[in-house]
Length: 270
Image 1 (cartoon, rainbow, N blue to C red):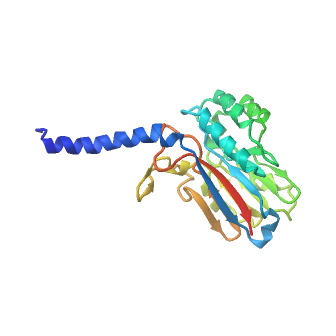
Image 2: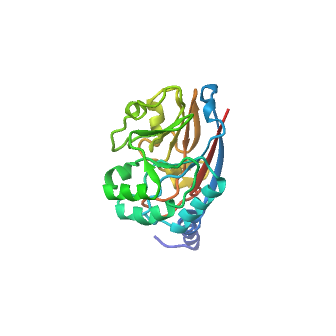
Image 3: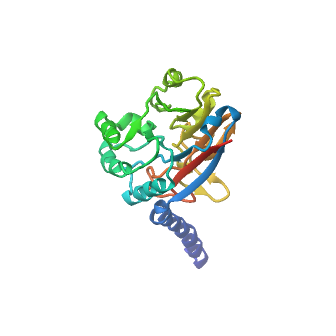
């Protein structure tokens, strides 16, 4: 086909725009840090959680083009907010468990009133070794795998990955005082449809990356299995709420587009 001036201009615009967007997503937006502040309304039955402030970060995928400076900035934001609780619902790594070491050096600086709690993502379930889990624990990240931690007026529970693990909600909360409301960390957000326990005030999830690459007026281009129903943000069903974070890192493609890395600061209130 003869390359006319019009064809040349058209192809330059189309392919140049695509390359430009990819370059922007890799060099600019991937390094941004959005701070999302969200009020999560509570039902009267969950009034014991009134005023609780939770920081949520997920999907670090630190061996996939991880950025220590980005994590450091996120940790600084959390510490400045003086939150009650930090929740990290999974995918610390993609495949390489050794990447937990530099990531943990940054996460060790997190400060909150009640502690930092992590959950297993689908990648973690396959690739996190016992040594890697011990590294996270030494950094102050208590991993909850079908376990719970009880406080004076509420409890937090963490479940194994739905994709690749063996989640056990009933077992995780069996010993918790039934009068206490629950915060639940579960990596895959579509699990919100699998229970109807009125004690669960809030589930926090990651997994979707908010789409990571989003199209104008369309939204997420691709979403993972068990992340298609609830791609990003706050959802409510009766007395249960779900918040899905866009996450911090990237997977496969070292870029984000219209979907910047995020630290979510959630304040619960009636």
